[in-house]
Length: 539
Image 1 (spheres, rainbow, N blue to C red):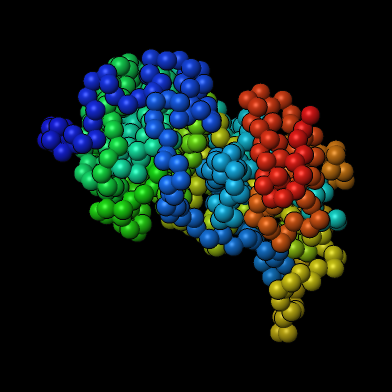
Image 2 (cartoon, rainbow, N blue to C red):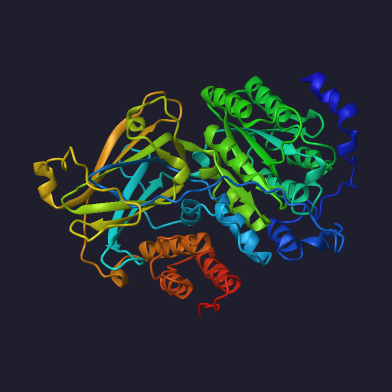
């Protein structure tokens, strides 16, 4: 890598500021609390960066994949629902960014499963050999009288800090001109500094940057050489165009050269997603990332900034890289992702995790999976070990919600097909007479395995609990799903409005040690006001 390193001195001078006069503020020596305070919205401009020129319009090129909401499906026609789990949380913090800036988000920026999965739930730690526990709960649907809501929760096994394997991390940082904004490169480097503070001597960090050209700024450096790592971060300066493809190739080459089979080998990409020069088509990038994941090098994608967020690209790269995608809108969010939840962000405990739910036609007429639209799989994919799916990190939780129409309900939803002329409903088995609503099946692979474990099966029966008697987690997840459907103007909301969602959330805050649920109530009130309703703030 000597050639690549010397290349930096010649080709990357436009993006490097040498010495203590680097553009970082607050200083890296400050405590995390001081950094959080210095970057707390809306005072980021006070950190020594020029504010945007008043009256100068900003070109908005943000891109989101179109989402077509899941519909109610008749059990007689589609008895199986299969999907890949998702632990990404980018949509929640990105939506928060829109609301805090005074506007409602585009509907396609709202991925309901990522809103729900932003929060921790009181699921038990796994007790057996499996890497995660499974919890289920059934109660009334808040959206349609008579319907049922099924809450399915997975809890990944937590790992003690001392048991975390060595970390071989390659920071791949976008230093192109589009990152020249206080909410982008300066926030990137300050965020990563919080991760650097947690490194141990057995950990190693490399630093690759890309703009019009790519280069290695820091060869693999032990985690106890923190000042050396921080110095490399502090010298970065944004400028030039973006060659994201070349940067990724170089980062993976560096990760491969120093690959440790006993370590966590991961590339951490920090960008606004503006891949506009070089190998930029998604197909080529995805094939590269898929090939590297087969070698055991996974990818985490951190999105930053506003105006040109390529959300669809970043989500796809993380999904295919056996990693996760988070959007960082503040140092508080960086601390959550890179420090508080570092185990889940960096340590994979199960990969290619798939869920398949079989519904009992004797008790369920129709069902709807809430969210996970871009994670839906064909029924046959459940048993296909070649089919990629999502990963669970240490300590991560995953939540999925289904709304059910009980058997015997009138039904007749818009768009429902007529009964078939040439085939009747399937004959019921003896198991259908047992009264269960559904059976949840799961398959997963160990992080270094190619064959799945499973299926694990869990039968779920109905309950007679009123909504008020369900758990706080059940009610809070329903409130978050309502918030997502309100933002998307979903046709599945029924009579539920902003005030109903606020009441449901406010009564289900639980312990809320980090204050995330309380802040959700604040965001819900802000969204209600922006949508033209009357804000309802919790006391």
